[in-house]
Length: 113
Length: 114
Image (tube, rainbow over all chains, first blue to last red; front, top):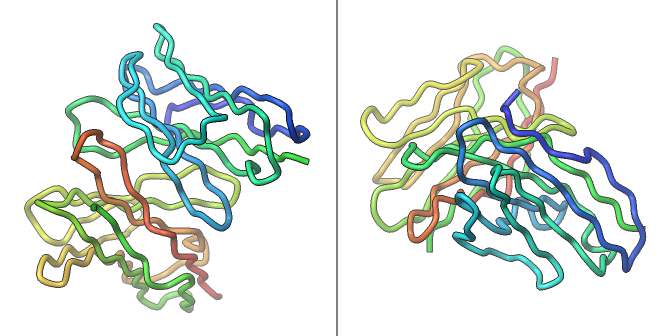
């Protein structure tokens, strides 16, 4: 158990809909990273938050947004869903100043029908 | 740009034989390198890392990795494979430009046959 919690584990929805994925980092970790894992594109970095502020953006679509709240949990919002958004979405956390390894949650599997 | 490459989509090995999963890197400066394993329907689990020091790094579950600066490689190894080692393995490098995110390779599926 990495200590990172993600909900929901599975989500099935229709095209055009909006979903929210939630992540609670390990106790004491201020950084949260979101990654998307799809069959054809491997693990793609989406966005990084540190202590409530956005630190870096990767290949995140404009239809997607994220935030990190004062209690350090983070949410990834996916809107106007398309079939191609079906993927595993991972959250990871780590501590500032460490040697860099990330600790991953079990992921949220999104299926868009 | 920082990147890692995993040249093999799949590696097959018989149980009890040594295994190697290959990774090469391209970074500016000194690399921070990592290996992760992903079992079916699970998240990524950290196996080991190279930051500095000894080129042979030991990690979880009997795995080790050898850092080779001249060949820009960081291959994952295990002296004796187990069927339970069958999983997806990812090499990663830390992006230290403006964030500490990890950049992952495309993954190598390890299949260990009894």
